[in-house]
Image 1 (tube, one colour):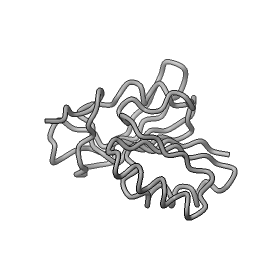
Image 2 (tube, one colour):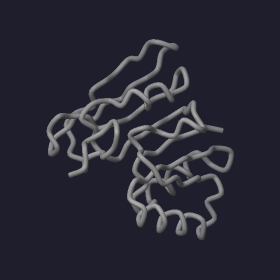
Image 3 (tube, helix red, strand yellow):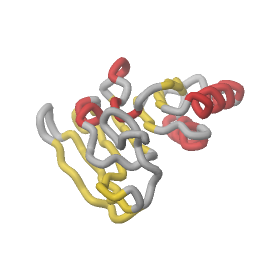
Image 4 (cartoon, one colour):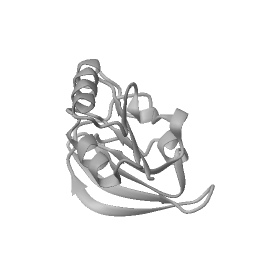
Length: 142
């Protein structure tokens, strides 16, 4: 099955959708920085019977190296640049979808593909506006 990493669990809705898409053979790891959101989503997803979702409380800008590499990584918050740890946690042929931009209110949605151990291709999918990614490889929280 496919192994997917979600950065930004929020309420857990996207995690549930992805879990349905990848099916019981797949595995989704989802990282949330805000403890109250993490706790609520973790309980809700467990109560709904999603055994293929693992919720993690932590800094999503650093990914989740414990279970890398991933087939897909998607980020639900905008980063000022593409976090290196996320790129390194992709398997070869894996894809990373992330909103990136130096402006907190406008970003480009970028699709990165790891083409070999050291090479990546990227495609700009257009303008978007996401909440900021906070963390070591994201915006600093003030």
